[in-house]
Image 1 (tube, rainbow, N blue to C red):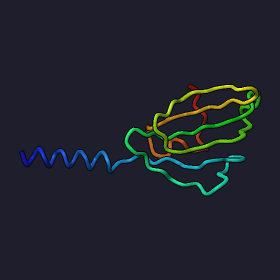
Image 2: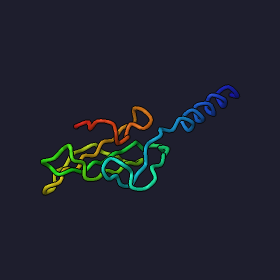
Image 3: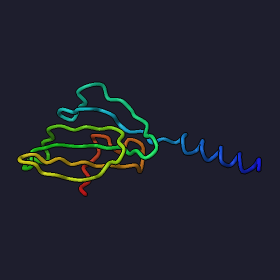
Image 4: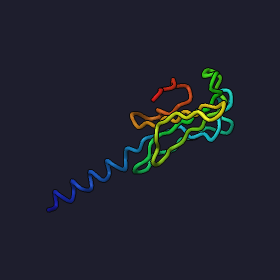
Length: 106
């Protein structure tokens, strides 16, 4: 019984001790965070998220972006009027939502 308790405590420590680190910035302009870029640590069920916005005809002309830790994140791409909004969610490595990483189309 004592060994089972130790195993449970060990597994609990492992799960809470290895949170994923993500970039957190509410708004980017010209590839730079408008405010000070921060780090957020994911909680249970969260992932890193990056949402990029550009004019639909100018994929290489980023208009805005947002990065953060997010619960219920869904990778998707939407076009609304002249804007394309691309949301990418990841949990494969720390800082997988960095602005300088290439766009991964879904």
